[in-house]
Image 1 (cartoon, rainbow, N blue to C red):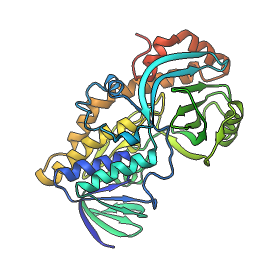
Image 2 (cartoon, rainbow, N blue to C red):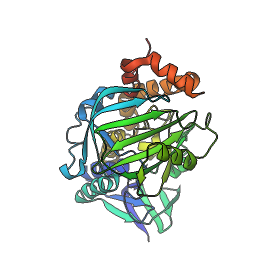
Image 3 (cartoon, rainbow, N blue to C red):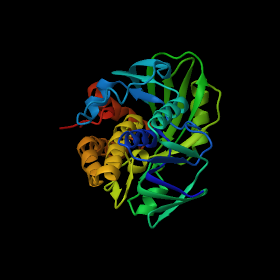
Length: 362
């Protein structure tokens, strides 16, 4: 295979699919390559999407997001009415929070189908290897491009090939699906199965997304061991195999543009450190990235506009979230006792600020 594109996008997740749609809308010839044989599979996230009000509360400079999050009704599986934060002793703190859950595999396919409607071309089973002289070397042959976008996750090969800084201090996490009827609240558990570990139950329709993550600094077991302990403790009827991923925990990387390339989504560290949320950010950043890439090809726009816009939208909230996470690492994650004490000191209001990327202390 030998192909040419104005914009080549590596990775067909929400960030890559959204970037493809908006680059194609600008009139650019867009190719998306995805190394897996099926878009959206396997599912490796919590599948939670906050309401538009929650998203704007966290990222007030994101602009009009109404059309961006105009998701088909059948992809909104369960309305969320709040978040329960549960300490190692089992004490619950209920926070107001609105949103909904989705099926990430179907959600990702929908985003890519929207890009294809605008003229983007999807090539599956195609592994990106490296860039050289304006061409991408892939497992299916070379692809010539004007702009390349890395939407290929926290260990991005595109970032490495472009000399863009890598994500550091990645948190490992695993997720699966559990059958049953669950209350309409996200349940977040801190400690209880290991120091520095956290776990979740996120309700869907007739099932829930359940998972465990941990800080390698404090927990010395394996994720599968911690997950089994969590599953047993809550008597979860798990119906799928565990799927693992790494979660960026230090906020957006310092530089997300290099020459004729950009990175977006997890590859750019556009993830909320304190809760691992990245789906809304992927769509917001994907739109900016795609529009800038399309304008670059059609009108000569500078790619640095993408960096500038993302700085305005994400830098402060994600820096605050990363600082809060580091504070929690120091004060709360050494033992279950310390976790319980810190959650008690913070209380509902400050913990609400914590999950919304706001400062918890003046």
